[in-house]
Amino acid sequence: MRFDTSLEKWRIHTGTLGSNRGDDFGAFHLPGPCGTKLHIIASPGNANPDIPWEHVSVSCRNRCPNWHEMSFVKDLFWDAEDTVMQLHPPQSKWINVHPYCLHLWKPLFQEIPLPPEISVGPKELSKP
Image (cartoon, rainbow, N blue to C red; front, top):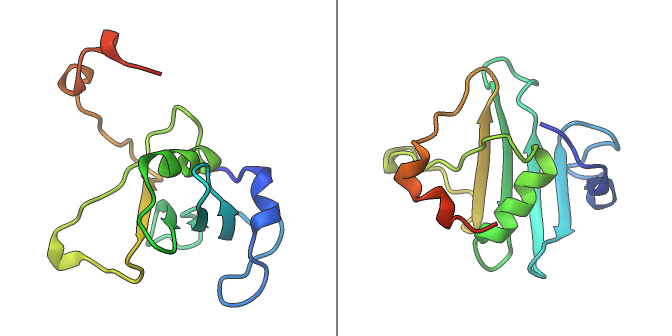
């Protein structure tokens, strides 16, 4: 996980979610690529050995973030070739603190399996 230096001007420095310039975790309020302010909380997964997951939560005030916004955030915190995921856990394990929040996850010590490309569609039909 990395922190794009452009995030620093959007970092929250005070309050419960406050962090310091250069920290590898924090909360950020920044304009998203679709004109909506994104509220982001990021943690690198190395602070607690019992939680070996990199994690970023993304929320908007009045709706869930869309695909373009989630891809924008993914690129702020991970490299283009990194695989990260959104999870849909069993309903019995849902925790909903904010109605319009989505999460990106990457385990620290294992690769995320991917389905065969052909099961998604023919590569020659893929658009950039």
